[in-house]
Image (tube, rainbow, N blue to C red):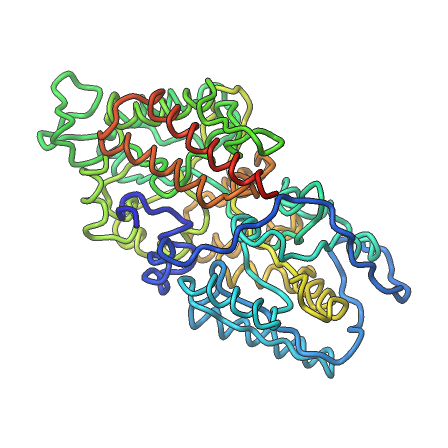
Length: 492
């Protein structure tokens, strides 16, 4: 298991604060069985529908085909906290009341046990009907197990234009569509207003796309908020980085290098488009890693591995330590907002523009998937459509702490957030969704967990000072990834 400083959203936290311990153990959870490369499978041909009007907004449910119990597996993401389980059960009751003879049962599994439980159910011919919520990475881990829902989408003439940004593309592959968007977790710059005020520095801008707000500009701003024990900031010649007590930036601590790669023109897949060639030693990848490395060892605006421990002494996240000026992270930090508010004033700013010269933001997303091995796809599809309807989808998003993936629901979401957390610029999150890239950085690649582990291992060598050469470290990493790909393609 990696050090706590290196843990990110995939291994430290993917839900609410009540499941912190389970999430932290996720890195030790059994790995899923390797998936095959996405190949065209004969799509299940859905039965002939009754007359269905063309939707003008989001998917509208049609009557269930037959009496059934639809099992929804919860464990691949958030949704496991007691209050979330209660809310899920309320939705199940509402569905049963509106659809006599059809029962929805939420089966909730701790995060650390998700892979083992799901694999056991598959082996026992007890595949759940739906897995939800599940992110792009979770979809990738068991890619072969998901049903292609495209025939159902086409049959029922689902209007995909109602979903925000490029979220539909996150769940669509050349060979199949695995789900419809439900929740989005946009990327923003969280910043500590009190630390900026003390430094007499301007706040990060809230508008996206300014050519003046670049990652290099972020470095210069972060220097003003990076302070040593004598009170000198990182822009001062008297600054002693070894004695830093406050950092201006902590951008990647809970993100992955793949998340930021496109901003430097590098591939977020870390491999070629045909999945056969490693690409983490490309000039673009090396430039991206070098910039991040320099934030630690050249500009000293971000803590190295040894220094970073202090950020977790009093908080479950680095920003909550009140020792970080800016943190590039996602809206799944909802669970931490109250803790931050109790300690300091904070707000959200826009993501800078990367060297590629195009405004791009990362985005995590949750969806539902239907298990291919389950035996009642028609009735399951009707339940899934109900979850994605304009009335229910925003409620699911509220339960999960995400932005609803329906464009039309954005204004109501913002109004609720304004009421609950006044004085914050929630429009920044909605604007961030306009600049997302696809494919998503968590999309399927061969042996995704092995490749991500190799990238994390290389990056950790740089953050600890074990290695001082970005090019050498990631050339070696590229060779290791290529070996993984070569081995994979021997049997696929």
